[in-house]
Amino acid sequence: EHKRAGADPCQSDSARMRDSAKAMLTGNAITTGYRISFLANYLMGVIYARVQADLGFNRAEAAILFCLAHMTPLSGIEIAEMTGRPRNSISPAVGKLVRLGLIAKEPAEQNRKIELLSLTEEGRAMSEKVVAYFVARERPMLEPLASPAERELLDGLLARLIFREDNWLDTTV
Image 1: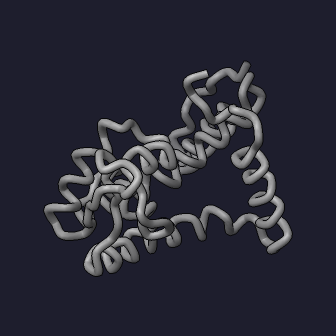
Image 2: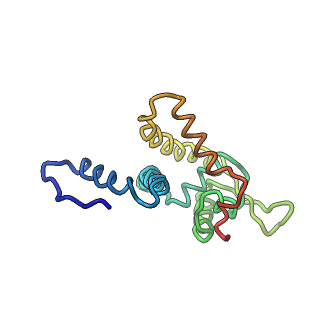
Image 3: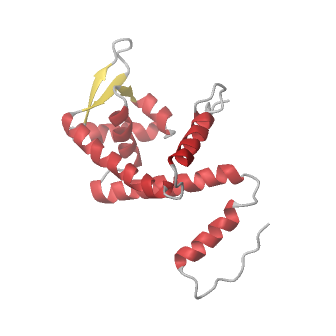
């Protein structure tokens, strides 16, 4: 258990935040999970706030553009599963992106009730702008990993946690 010390009035806000985060991110019952969540929040939260402010897209809309920039066509259900976003946040976002002419919908051949989404030319150009925010934010996050070997090690470890054979990612279990 870490005791919170009195705030040092000479300490900068970022130094205070760093010290508080260090206390929370070490020696707790879920250190690894909490650290991953902390990084994700400071990575993704900042990206989505900037995309919203600069481009006018909320988190679900930006996630759809990001997903379709990397794989197409996809259904709304697939996007929800890939992003961990609630399905009910995807449908309104799809509607907005269709109205803006950034994505197109067409029924799946196997099941006409399922709509497959893909980027239009305008959508591809916008998705490149969205992806640039992700790249720009990730780069400084990884700077402390000085060598390509360290970055490859982190990437490999994260891949092992994500691309596993058990059903850990199935939240219905």
